[in-house]
Length: 385
Image (tube, rainbow, N blue to C red; front, top):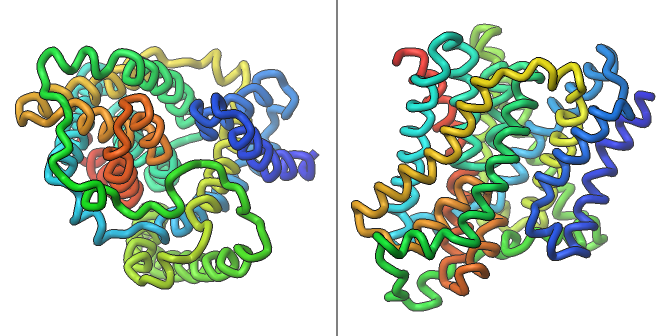
């Protein structure tokens, strides 16, 4: 059975990526959401046994995938390009992150005071998720020592609520916001607004394992392993209970620093390879869900996640309206932070505004790099509130 679990975790993501390439509808749904649906289905139906031995294997697979995924996701980030974003996008990013933190604090005060240790960690994970995406959620799960059952519930709730949020933003978002916010005006040239997004413009993953890309991927994997070894060595210098936190934060920092090197940043398909590993992680973790797990649902976790999701958008919109940020910039920034960079083209298409796609993806990439740190800070902040 162990071999079957490994095959499922490694090859289901490839199937998902192929399906999202073949189907524009599934591509819009997103590979991460599909991975969680498949994983949860395998667990709930009992196709993957709910045993301690199997859970241990699934946890080991997940723990292997995340440290390797973080460098690969961040290698292609162009840190300097973030400084060239249009002023409105910079303001909107700051306001979006601030809005998310405010929503997390409100949710914690309403539903987390009875169990501050658990809910501060959940708040940290949700902050990382809604400022940088699933990679940060997974990183913070490890850094904050969150147990699998809690992580699965938070992932499931946030996935469901994010889907509702995404549909609302695409269908009604601009129509609602135009009542009290200015419309988008392209005062910048197309060249000035369009950040270079070579490997981030679409989640097709075509050619990921092509022969001419393998050399680049092997170089990236080698560098990622070196970063992991250095991160582990540094983490060993700290007390045992701090190991995971220091390890994740260190490899994130080293990966961002590495991305400042042009040769490293130009390595092909690193972003796609990192996302493949995130899907491996998602299948491994989501497949641990079972009917027994779902029977232990804590309504406070659901309510906390609901306040965090809807509150993040609410506070972001209110703050953006006060600072006179336009509708398209606000919606694109919000989508990129909460749903991750691949959704920037989705909202750009829905808004019929290609100019926001490049900056939107750059915002999401900034979230990838900073989300783990912001989430870790918020988790610790909640403990002293």
